[in-house]
Image (cartoon, rainbow, N blue to C red; front, side, top):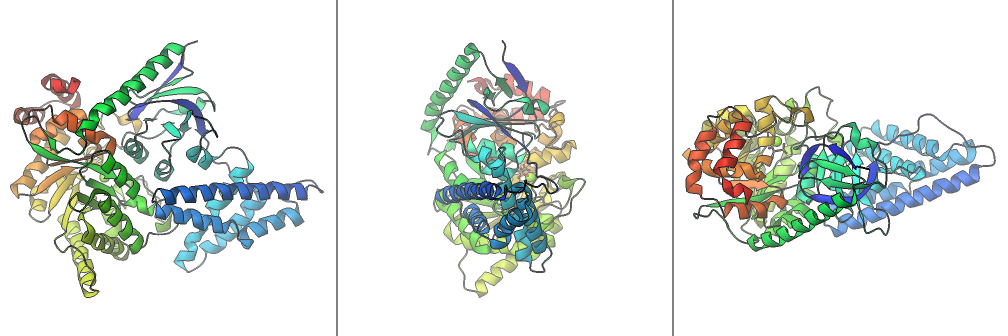
Length: 584
Ligand code: PEP
Ligand code: MG
């Protein structure tokens, strides 16, 4: 029998072979169900066992996060462990089973809701935010009472099995993905999502193959089926034949050999064949990513997506927590390596329960990133102070996302200056010369790049958003792949204009959108004169190897030529023809 094949968007390249694990959406029991008289004791034991199992799971998560240096996540799990000992939560659920003959699931759900609703109504913001923790913990216990387990699937494999698991889900939240353990999860396949959805980005940074936007077919899989994820072609093979399996095993082996070849580029400068040097840096979302990026040959960080420090937790990270994260990220690279800290970019596809943002019809065009920060200066200032304090320990730079107007940039800069004043008055050390720059990811800013360039220290082009706003194509919509392509000349023209504007004012310009790590884009961007390329860590060494084969002096003409072409396809064909090194 032929293997079944599913097609999706190749979100993170590489090959994974493993057993399917379906991450089912949670179903929380509605209403109250009861056990028969006389069964209370047995139900209580079932409940206690589930609490113990949930507690074991949380303990493991806590220890793992701690060992990985992910203090923030560790703290959340520690707080959840304490909730499992809470009388009002667990004691009350036991009481419902004992005296009212509730079924364990219903008892947990009702006690959890009762406490959560009570907390959510309080004036104290901190306590109010505990409601989310209570619900989270209740759900974990309820999952333990059943057999479908979201977090189990994310964090553990079939016990004792040497085979990796391949995760299948409707979608993964960024925090789900952040928790994936690559030693256990070989790859993932989701029904929804696009190439620049944040789960795809994290997959690339962790280096696990992923396919997104597969549609409902992704959910037709059965637990335990053998699957191959070809993250390079965007194909999933279910129950492959022996021949296919052998072919993919050999592809996997080839990839291992290729990695060994790339190793010789580790620790080397990033130079073209004719001696033009650029910077190849990484996009990160945590201290752990920083360490991994350093190991994978990045020269620094071109984009620290700090919003991940805010996500997957019920409260906001404190100044000290943030300071520690930024300082440790810098320390992972050493004193001189550039570390660009982007202030938080919540909104869009990244939700934050603790900010209680209203639901919007068009979140990517809504209350997001700098727009929230300028509206909530206290929140922003906490982050600015943390970045400044960490700047005493490395070559940190600060970058504001989603800038559309000069006014926004100036307001953000003014708050940065205020934070500097505060620290000075408090005698706290920081780098007074810290560079401050902006992301160019809104066409409005790209159009005004000449004006911005007079005031900022640098630009970093965010093509993920720049493409979606230029082409009016939602970056999360898998049906719009043909529009969501940075090689479309309107996008290339904006990029060209931004690079020229920066250089006119002697400012450096980087790119931290996914385009920067795409091989076909590299010759164009090099030809345009881009100074810094920031990409997922796994793309750094291949990019350095590719760069070493390119003759930059020949690429300026190529970069000019593509500006005049019809569409992305024409550009792609032309570059493939003109740059034979792409094939090597
Ligand atoms: C971008 O928009 O290109 C970018 C790098 O930012 P994010 O993907 O986090 O929106
Ligand atoms: Mg962006």
